[in-house]
Image (cartoon, rainbow, N blue to C red):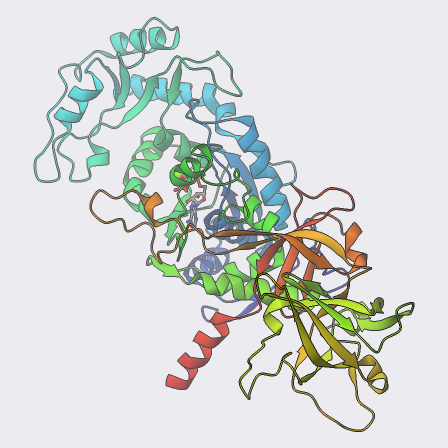
Length: 587
Ligand code: ATP
Ligand code: MG
């Protein structure tokens, strides 16, 4: 089974936009986790059960790295007929909020996954976790320590030196119970005391040197309000929450490998249900930071336009940018799941987005930097409608009619006064095809008298080429996009580049801040673009291919009725396809 490919049934939840009517079936490559579960199902290790969970801490918005974990956990559950819980690991009241909870739920749903009624919170387990702590105290496996945080650090020792026992380590069970109760009752200040596991101050793994289980924090929690002034530590909470939920395969990223020994100790000491932890490599992407701490810095520092800034690697950001859930799921399948950390080229993510939009995005015409074209032999009072197909990749997408008239706009870049021989666009004396329309020939460039800038082209059209095809077999090499001046709608278009110019923005040189790697040109706003009239009412979130310019999405934040703002989702140039091709050629 190990190297076999298996069919994944369609995921629950919203189908990806534009994919209506398409059967959504993907083939997931096998990986080492799948192989482990295959074997467990075969041997009946968990009575054939597969129970996973996605456990975010609601202290920020989800990013594309989380998508990898979501697709893995929900995907495996779907695939093996199991279930996946959504659990909020909310043990740090100073950083968590309901806003983050709501955003996480919206993002998981948007990706196409459904936790049904299994929405859990570690904070709902606080009473049970407290009881577990009491059980440990009674068993002589936990004690209340009065050392200050600084002293605890000093006593811990180092990788090469063993730690020292705290003078409070020998407290009696009765005294520990009394103090722990009083900690809960709010008798002590923050940091005055902690509850620690009594393990081994000489353990080679520093996490095993009597780790803290509970700390005092007189901070209101977004769900439990002021009911608690002591909060369980993440390590204690996480493994017990998995145990309470009877998780079979507890999937986490590699950095938690070292925590496994502690999780095992806690679960064994309490003799409770014991899930199997499996670590996998986290996703790293070039030109991207995927650490909530850093992303929060960008948001709070006003460096980006909120969590959903289209340049952010957050799911809300890439949604606003126009990425589709299907593209992200495909990307997550492509990158696979491995045991060794690596960095994925962001071009692969963009490639997945293009692939989906190529199939599903309607083609339209837009001009980003308009240059006026007057068709001097086209009657002033005439206008006509031409047929334009909506998506050559998908004939069922049908066609629409677009207006043509005497005055048009073309892209400024598509004209050159002095053009080389192999220039297949507009230049004095050159003939081109206007997509879906006519052949036109440029006769004259009108210039601004003051600046010398070309402000208008005078062209003639060939009436025999309606639809963009000549009757006499005459060929032109260039096909340009255009819009009719009188009919076009003026819109704002936003072009994006990587938020970080550096390939690895996390690798900061001596003392340098990661923010120094920020690309100052990552956002370009073009205020006077022109689009086909039909786009005036384009709905926020809808996606298009602007011919020759890329894929674009109507911005949900800044668009107004009749006044859409377009975000460029991705250009048409597929650098990943090039990389793949050159690798194949080498091989
Ligand atoms: P960050 O490091 O960005 O703060 P985190 O790990 O603290 O993220 P959590 O909310 O704890 O964020 O993450 C929820 C789940 O998502 C965890 O199981 C975590 O391992 C996983 N996860 C987080 N980042 C990545 C990533 N880059 N690749 C794969 N999985 C990830
Ligand atoms: Mg975490």
